[in-house]
Image (cartoon, rainbow, N blue to C red; front, side, top):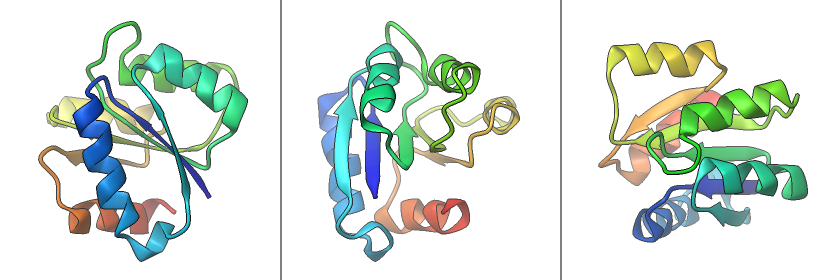
Length: 120
């Protein structure tokens, strides 16, 4: 399994990667990173990840714009948000565009694992 972690914060990417490394569900996964949606779109095209974990608010291309661009390109990895934004409207928008889950920051490895259990 290959996982793409997308966040404009290098520290947050490290936190997500650390949380993933402790989960049996994704044990042995290769983890790649991108700093924004624009970079992530290129990574998806080059690396074909099975799972994308994306922040919502990022420069260049937001998480929801990234998800929309994936849809338009016919690219369909399992997609979920790990974001500090968590309004009901955002949940609905994410779901409408095909996101399988939205995990709110701060999160725990257990809450991330629970979301992955439903999505994978």
